[in-house]
Image (cartoon, rainbow, N blue to C red; front, side):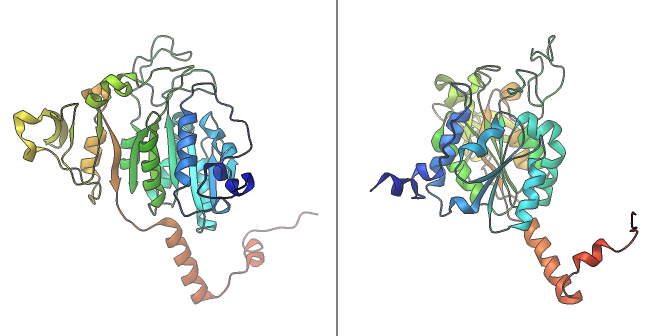
Length: 341
């Protein structure tokens, strides 16, 4: 097989890798996410001419340059809105949205929640490093209380957003979390999100080794990971710990960490990502390292609901059948118009 044939083979990583030099800081977690994305695509039955990456502004927003697909490096915070237009106009495309915690949850928070509530067919990746990296280290909407940065020299007093809570509160039909130190987990999560019809959000814990190094060390270091990370598995009791001795129960609607030996396996919460209502996934998503010492990863919710693009196209078909083809020129000249000499 020649080098050209390898590059043109969708099952090879080279097919998905652009010719651009990757320009992130050495050691940035974005490298691992990019590799997982490129490798994951080799398992999909899609082609690059049918794939689009739309990003906003920030370090994560360089992503479209490094995927050998169509892409747009768009406006700060507006990637979900631009991607919505693309998804509605071209429902045949696979549209990905990429942004950081600042881009998505600060200036872009409004666009994100409405893309989710409308259930637009988008796969949204939220890189969460709890800091503004591109602008050199200001606190972000996900920075923890007390975070000392250039913009919070005495420590942040803002309670942070929980992206999982935001997505579930907006009614997202697919919500998941992964992290940049586990390529297999990322690939599996990205694939699940891609296969979902509707709005899918994946939060990715991502390390910024320059401005917020070690932000997730308390839960992601190898010697603590088994005791700190809860790997959600659909249909199974939520158990974790190196010895499988810890679990999650619902107590008065609140997800609570318990010792399995004290309550028994039958008392544990069985994870059901297909629950119609997001109440229980929301409770699970409220478990954080700060609140309970543990953090769940995996798929929180995956349900089916009417998808926005299909609904819009159904409206157009019905209107066309009832009223006939539209006249754009007549529409533009209707109503309050005037001629300027």
